[in-house]
Amino acid sequence: MRNTGLLTMPGATRACRIRVLGAGLVGRLVVSELHEAGHDVTLVDLDPKTLEWAAGLGVMTIHGDATASAPGNSNAATGTGSPIGEQAATEPGGGEYTDDILDVTQADIWVNMLPGSLGDCVRRPLLERGAKVADLSFTAEDPRRLDELAKANTGLLLYDVGVAPGLSNLWVANACAQFKVGGEVAEKVEIRVGGIPREPDSQQEDGWSYMAPFSPSDVIAEYERPARIRIAGKLCTEPALTRRHRYCDPEVGELEAFLTDGLRSLLDIDCPTLLEYTLRWPGHIERFIALRDEGALEGDNRKKTLQDLYQQWMFDPQRPEITLLSVVVESQNLIWRGRLFDDGGGGWSSMARTTGLVTLAAVEAIMSDLIPSGVCAPEQVWQELLPLAEKRLASAGVVLRRDNTIRTR
Image 1 (cartoon, rainbow, N blue to C red):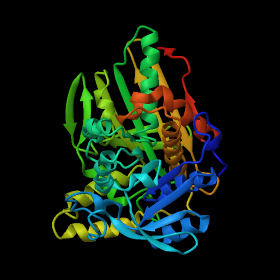
Image 2: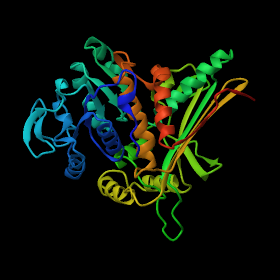
Image 3: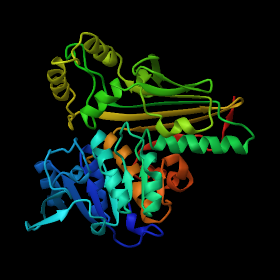
Image 4: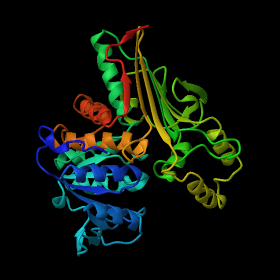
């Protein structure tokens, strides 16, 4: 992928020390781009292959559990580690030293890309130490509960810096601002997003028509966690995978949409109806529901079923895949539409590109002192973050189409 030009941005003309916690499919792009831009990058991970890949770039690597420093943490990835999270660290040249993984004097900016609850474990210790954090970790826990802590220590955390949540939040905030100029208010928001193979499995393959572009455990959690939505001004919770309907994209074709719990901070905006759906090829979620209803995810059956799903959903870098995002915001008389589409490029998957480039925009915004102290959702800083995110996405060839002016019904 082309250099994204971090060092040429106003307010970001110096190389920064950046510590990245976790590097899966998306994290690798973030590490690679930051290193290529000339920053002093350190990657913390437990996967030897990932660390070997990073060291091959010339990136400093730390083989360790970043969550070990979280007081009373029972979810530490290794179950071991000293109280301050000391682990073996390896330099590109092969030297070894011992370091406090969450020592904020060792980095100017932190990028939290740990999966699920592990990602939440590092937030408090980092903010207690006044760290500046770009946070992609999607967790059930609300990071805003740490806002006062962050402000008290002059730290900051900009979270949900991906596609949806992430770019979707920025687009909704932009639409609402345009409505306000037109004397209208948003009455309904519908978000649909999915990362799927470019083509579904054939009848002969009889597969899931799906590859997990991030942690399969997070995908399953998404399918099981109740979805928080707002209908006619009332905040309510419905089971995930409900409100199923067919959705036809003019370029991709017919997909199936179903409720998932991705709205998060958007539930606090002034809009009576808010819904977010995940997109999959038809038949995928019906198969998962059948598996669930058969009891395959209960009791002693769960472990084996999860192991099977991890294998069956394994990401195949040789298989073409796409990421699609649709955002529609309506007022009484106006409609705002936004669409993102990508099928990969530059040796990276579409999900790595679309998610990772928004994360890089968040790092850039922090580096340029555009984000205040405290814990911020994307929509709170949309004017600062949206131009950076759209520039990175468009420069990489991601297709973005959105209304620059609101269209009357």
